[in-house]
Every structure is written in C-alpha cells, then in structure tokens.
Length: 365
Image 1 (cartoon, rainbow, N blue to C red):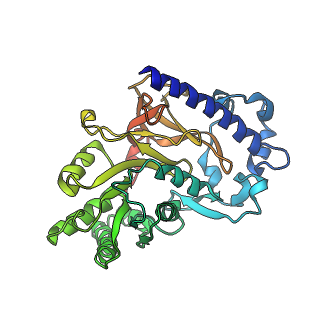
Image 2: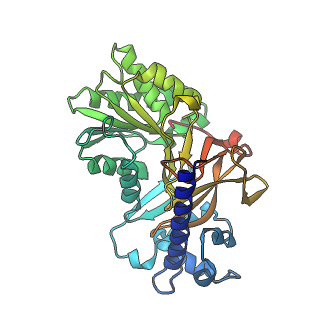
Image 3: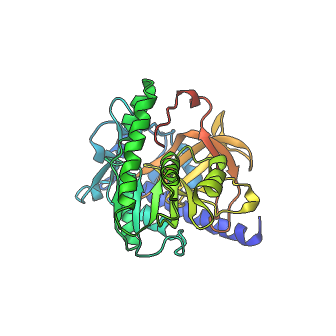
C-alpha cells in the first residue's frame, strides 16, 4: 500500500471514529433518540453515551437482527427529532410474511448524491435522461435512481416491476411465467427507448440488462445504438464472468458500466474503477463513513479476516436516520485493501453466504 493511500486511510479512519460516536450519541439521546435504541439500552451492561468513543467500540453492541425491522411502528428506528419531518417507507427482502421496512427522511437522497460524484460526466452526461430498469413499488431503488437522475439534471423514465412476483413464479416452478414477466418488463423498456426521450443513462439489474441487450440485438440494434452511454448496475448476478461477457459481447467499447453493491440498510457501495489488470475482478467499497462493510471470520464475527482471505460480510450503518451496529449480511467475499479513490477496506467476490446459499432464490436480480 502506498504512503499516500496509508495517509488517506488513516484520515478516513479518524472520520469514521467521529461518525460512529456522533451516530451513537444521536440515536441514544435521552430526549431526541430513536425509541428502539432507547429501549434496547436499558438491557445493556454498558452506557452507549459514555462507553462508545470510536468505531471499534461498536463491537460492544450485540449483533443486529434484521427481523426487528418487520412490522411497525416504522418510526421506532428514527430519532425523535426527525419524527415531524416528511417521511418515506422502503421495504427490503421477503416474499412472504411481514416485509422488513425502513423509515427514511433524506438518507436515500444523500446516498445517491454522494454516488453521483463518482460517475464520469463523459459517460453520464449532465442533463441527460435516464431509464430505471429495476424494481418499483415500495423499494428505495426506484426513488433513489430518480433522485440521482434529477440531481444530474435529467428526467427518469421508469418501468413497472414487482420482483416478489417473479420469485413466487420461480419457487413454484413456473419458469415460463417468469420468462413471460421478464419479457413484459423488457417490452416496457424497449417502448420507452423507442419513444424519442433522448435517454443516455440507465440503471439495470444484470439479468434485465442482458435481456434488453439481447432483445435489441435480435431486432438489429444494440444498447449503444439505442443511445445509452452510461449504465450503473447492481445485483447478485453481477459476477466477473458476466462483467466480461457484458463489456465484450453486449455493450461494446463505447458504453460505460459500473458495478454497485447495495441494499436498503447500507445505501450504495461503489465498484473499484475498471482496470484490465484485475481480470474483471469486482471490488466494492462501502460509502464510508455513513456505512461500513467488514469481511469477518465465519467463526468469530468480531474478527476481521486478513487481506485476500474469505469471510462473511458484516454491515454497519451510521447515519442520522439509521443506526445498525453490526448486521450479518447474507453474503460472503474476500477482504480487499484500500484504494486511492476509496481509502478503506473493500470486498470482492460477493456471493451468497455458503450456509444459506441453497435456500436463496434469485429472481430478476
């Protein structure tokens, strides 16, 4: 690691320590804190307000169980000082039962404004219109991509897509039904792209991007010929093999694509800038200091693995609206060294955690 990266990493760590302390003091403030955390604090054998003085002190908290996010009131994770603000509810995961929900005021806007700063203007031109080829309904992604587009001066065109319906079809073995639903989504996208809306940028899940590209190729066109110059994509199907296939076969040299890794709790982790020397390896960096990703030992979730070693992904969220002091994601991967652009640890090779991978159903993602 170069001296400059080491210095930037040290500065980033100091900033993270401050963010961790600030988040704890806000969410555990006796008057203005979050009802959920004020209730939890009564059972701790430490005082969050005095005993958390750096990021590592967050390990004093028990692991967060995301089942706590099921049901209401959804405002219980939101500090009381924000309860009078205009709010949104975003759902995450779950095809049956009560969905997990997160109450949001501005976090999704802030997350995507920060992400916008990482996009190269030559491929994502300011003022350009966007196509949102992803989940709609109560999912944060739809509004977040629209805000990203608006921040960059454009108009966002969206399709209707319910990923839970696709998962239900797949679970009952109705592959033809799932394919028909995918075709329905691509029909909408093709119609929008053919309607003269001057769309240059888009978000898509890998499966839907591939389906759109193949549909256009079948009609004698392509993603590039449809006018698209920049794509950001995210989803479990974004593998190094697919990355190579996408760049070499689907998009061509003039369409830029950047991988992302995110969820409703974390926000959006950026992919390391493409480097041919990496052989299409995808490395993600969380949006520190607002969220942190660690790669930890399978047998000890408080222990970070060595660089290049494999472990389970552990998430922390440290914003003014949400505090998550350690949540075990359903993914595993390899720990990566800090990057010049993102001077903190990253994770590569993300894939379903091996203990639960066989129980995971992937739909349009």
